[in-house]
Image (tube, rainbow, N blue to C red; front, side, top):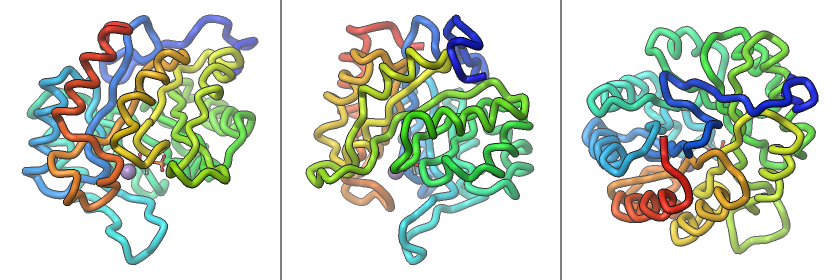
Length: 264
Ligand code: PEP
Ligand code: MN
């Protein structure tokens, strides 16, 4: 179902009125994690002013260490939804476990993110496949393109055809970057699949100074948009500060992206 042979035209996924995969670029921006009502409001307002299409923010965080901040969970989700309502942006946030699906539906999450670490959690994929909510499927840390597309297939085979793919870098021997951004995967997926593909230059690089250039490169490679981490005070972010850009840098990036294509 994810294959272009099954569906020759590009799919356009409607996320609460925001069309992903059409002629315009989509930009999802916001902090790695929701921290306080003030923080998420500040960032939401800033990215809205700069023209972002969706607000991102993690409430349920898949952290490597169980002793790291795990996200504000339901409380964080409430803060995200409220901030998004104030600035009138749809939200994207990560679902880590099927037992929170009821909460996500109740809070009307516009786009459900399946994180890299859950890309092959097949029961979770099947569960979101039975929903009527679009899904953002991130590429697994060490997943091949075939495995990634098969995960999309798990979702789509249950009925939900509204899948957006997100390249977020893969594990390689290279240590200069957190992951290795596989831009050729964008080109491969665009050829093999009709699904929209976006790129996350934040998690792919781990360094805020690389985010702008890699975002531009992603669009040049054919991506339908980007997802990036923006924080009002990156030095003190509770999670992923090193790769988070300031609202000022985000505004600058939006200006550069607009030179390539209009933003939704
Ligand atoms: C995220 O986007 O918040 C995240 C945890 O990303 P990934 O699953 O790609 O590591
Ligand atoms: Mn992050």
